[in-house]
Length: 222
Image (cartoon, rainbow, N blue to C red; front, side, top):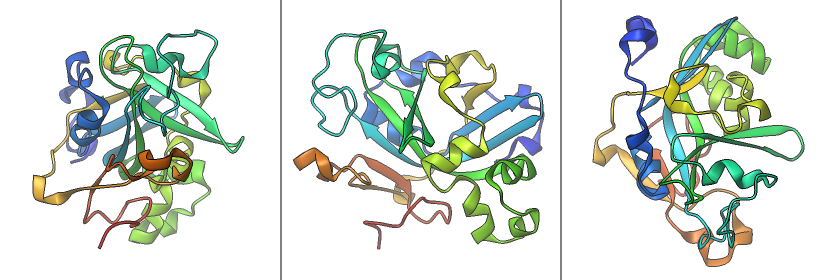
């Protein structure tokens, strides 16, 4: 599915109710949906193929672990908003990660978008990622665009100013209905790079469209 198949106004922006489930459920449901970034220089879009759920105060891998009240000055503040808000944070002092808040207000859960299959605005993504356009004719080149959380944020120009953005408004950053994968196409695995979280590191909270060529990694997959 591509926005090239029709005008963007023909696509259904996901409504609040879609996001009000627990993070583990939402992480599965977001597979196949289309992330859209609309800026003056153009539209970029991609199909979500890999997610990770972060399940709130009892999940030792989650930023809100042990936190039950919202602090407007803490980086997790956006996680306490109703499902469907952007939670964006910086890692390693240089890469932004784009997450979607889940569940009802006051329940600090989120889903990390780990990888996309790029569908629209590929030349614009390539210029932001420093990828030569000639590489876009190859699968390996396309994977360089959105094959990881930091890559997505660079390709889509997502940064700290997007933190807290309401994704249900259809503004400059939102998600539209896409083609859901079949259950047989989806696999759950442990999350990536959360070894610090003890037994929570083994929770099967990463969801992938297993045959996709655009995953950030094939770790834990056959």
